[in-house]
Image 1 (spheres, rainbow, N blue to C red):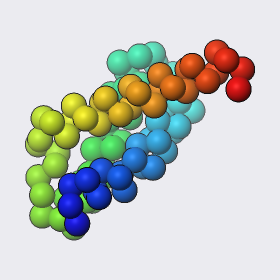
Image 2 (cartoon, rainbow, N blue to C red):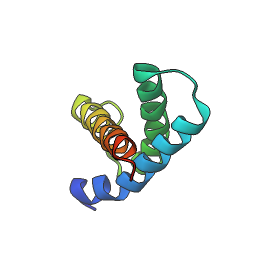
Image 3 (tube, rainbow, N blue to C red):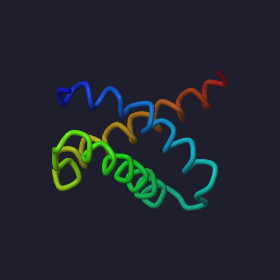
Length: 84
């Protein structure tokens, strides 16, 4: 399983993490982002076990996860403001 394949499989889990944080975390901004990243980190622990890759200790993986979370939340906010 290639890294891109892993990333694509993680995307729905990132979306689920964001939705869960939106429902259950009352903080704002960085606090919610940290909570979502923590959830994704938990998922990555499982992926690591199956792939023999050290994804959690990779700064690029962490940065990319945060970028995806920010992009999804930004898109959700735009959609909310447009009334869609």
